[in-house]
Length: 303
Image (cartoon, rainbow, N blue to C red; front, side, top):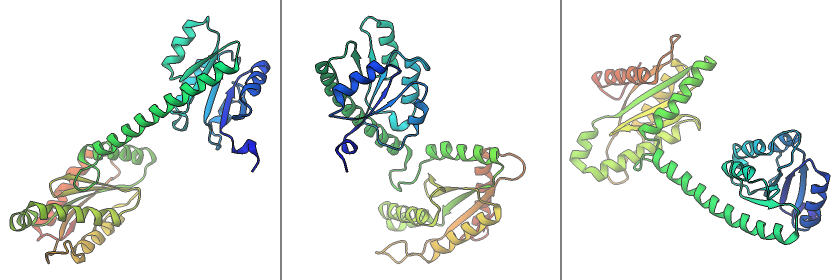
C-alpha cells in the first residue's frame, strides 16, 4: 500500500484551478485529496471511499455552494463529517446561511498554512462532540422504541413501523398479514408463581418469537401478555402456516428451567384483502380472531 492511499481522504469541491493548487500545496502531505467541481459532485455522493473531510469553495459556478452544503448534510454518511466553507471574510450574509446548513467551520482567502491547520484542529474537536451526541441520540431512540422487559418493539413503535409497511403494501399491491397473540392462562401463572416468574415467561416467549420470525418481520409487545406480529409480503395462507408453527413451537418449548410448566398461545390472523384496510382495522380483525381461538378452547389459530 502506498503512502497516499493510507492517508485520510479530503474531498475538495471547487471550480477554481488556483484553489486546487493552494489546497494541494498545503494539505497534500496530510490528506489524499479528491477534487470535484460543483457540476460533478453527485458522483461523489455515491463514492464508496470513506471521506474524512470536505472543503467547499463558496465560488462555485454550476451549483450554489449553500445548496451543496444542504445536499451533503441530508445524506447519512456525510451527516457528521467536518465540512469547511472556503470564502471571503467580507461576505457575512453567506456566513450566516452556511451556519444554518451545518457547516463545521470556515476557511478564508487568502489561504495560509497556519490558518488551515488551526481550523482543522477545531473541526476535529467539533466532529468528535457531534459523534458523541449522535450516538446518545441513537441510544435514546432505541430505548424509546422498545419494551424494556422483552426488548421487542413497544406499541408506539409498532404503530409507526406497521403504518409504513401497510402503506408500502397498498402502494405495491403486495400481501401483508398481522398476528395477534395472547399467552393462555397468564393471569393464573402470575397468581400462582408471582410476577417475577411471569416476567421471565414473557421474556422467554419474546425470545422464542424473535427466533421464529424473518429479519424483516416486526414483533411488538402490544400490552400485558399480548403480542402483535406484522408479516410483510405474506399471504393469508402463509400467515396461517407461520401462526401454526409458532403455536406448536410454543407448546413444545420449555418456558422455564426452574418450574415444569406448559405454555400455550391463542393466535388471531388478519390479512389485507382487495379492499384497503387501516392498521387499526387489521388489529381489530386479528383481535376478534384471537378471541375466537380463546373461546374454542385456547392453544388454537383462527382467522
